[in-house]
Image: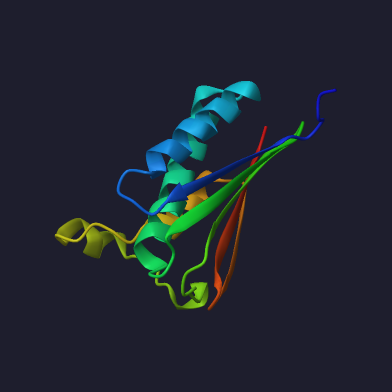
Length: 137
């Protein structure tokens, strides 16, 4: 019997380039859901950013967990680490003019995730962070 709303679970170590394993999985899920190339690319970029943020900022996590919840009208992806957490209200949105002239081009991850996905929720404490991203089909 086929499960109506399957979940794909993935645990990846905090190591360079492991976000690519996550995006390969999301591409397979998107193909299963018959999502178009544009939505697939948006999901992959947002997921990659969420993974890289967890790798770089969680500090004490040795791995992250990713859950893909598939339904008829959406894909919900949760990325969870067990790191130090953060306060999103204290994360500044970069000034584009300053970034263009700066040698340091990083710092766009959270904003990029929010722009690429339909909804994004950040739950964070000193026990870790979960980013929940939804893309409608």
